[in-house]
Amino acid sequence: MKVMVPVKRVVDSNVKIRIRADGSGIETANVKMAINPFDEIAVEEATRLREAGVATEVVAVSCGAETSQDVLRTAMAIGADRSVLLGTAAELQPLAVARLLAAMVEREQPALVILGKQAIDDDCNQTGQMLAALLGWPQATSASRIRVEGDSAVVTREVDGGTETVRLTLPAIVTADLRLNEPRFVSLPNLMKSKKKPLEVIDASTLNVDLAPTWITLKVSEPPVRKPGILLHSAADLVTRLRDEARAI
Ligand code: AMP
Image: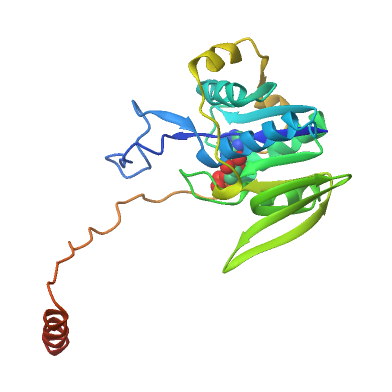
């Protein structure tokens, strides 16, 4: 069984986000970039499936600029066997990514695609769902457990107020939530070794996929600054404060 894992290059989660001076988006020039954390979890899960003998091959796929090769190397250092970059300079929105991934699914014929539940830069939480719709495949989003049983996957999903377990007939789409696993440390030797694994670059324009954006960002701005909290020393202080503030309204 082949598992495909789409991985996105995003601003490193430890970096404080800055907005471009012209309000057109997030500053990415000279900023540390990394594999999207949910995608790291997805690669770890696929790797564990291969280590358990359930999967036979793990293929990581990224759509974007040449620079995305670094996150594919990270995916292969975790355990992906090979990777494919669908190269394009276009700014990709989830529908365009889902279309590119659907073209890759046609080519690779995986039994399972594990994506991150969302990219931490756009927080869209859409690509997995759109890919499932384009392919007509069953999907389970926000997975905290995946078990493959014969020709189906039993997936526990994080839902409001608890969990839900569903059975999907393979081939299927699953998106990874935070509690699915704790990804292994990416060691320098493994990162070096990953350089020997195959990384294929395909020009996305050769796939005949419509990459046109479906929305325009008008402006990106900082959230309003929150007032600092105050420390009260007793319940009586609190009552006085609430009474006085209520009077002032
Ligand atoms: P989103 O819908 O943008 O929140 O992204 C959800 C998931 O789709 C991510 O966690 C990735 O697994 C996948 N994805 C999004 N953008 C890309 C991309 N440019 N290349 C590869 N995978 C992507």
